[in-house]
Amino acid sequence: MYFTDRGIEELTERRGGEEVSLAWLAERLREFVDLNPEFETPVERLATWLARLDDEDDD
Image (cartoon, rainbow, N blue to C red):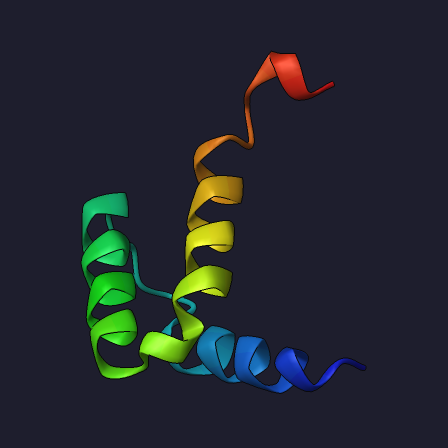
């Protein structure tokens, strides 16, 4: 198990039944980076990865 799995599991347990918009998620990511600027690059990479999941060009 990766260390990050603990946070993912907690997210699933606490909020797994909720539905959120991508706009809501984007705003939470912006808030997180504002509070934790040292995580700007990993958050940007995650956001880019999520945005491009369905791109056929990446196959």
